[in-house]
Length: 136
Image (spheres, rainbow, N blue to C red):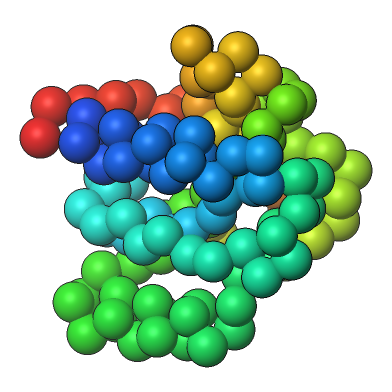
């Protein structure tokens, strides 16, 4: 069964980034192997939008190069929803073009209790993927 394991420290950094960049959507990439995240790459939301994100291509290329050189794989693309639930919007589904990655959404609808959920989105079909916070 497909699932994503995120160590506590990396999970905390992802939440901190989402809170720091609110009210715009934060975004980034999670890399690792065998479904376990080993590295978080914070990315710049080039659109600086509260309801959309677009990663800077030059940052994406550098991250992909780093992931390959570390013999890791891209496991997930994450972004935050500063004011809405942790579920893919119609635009998230339409723009989910990277195959074989989990899309992680960090909802700050209640900033005191962020909600993080994972989704596999292929050909506009959405399936929930368990996200588990694990020890380092």
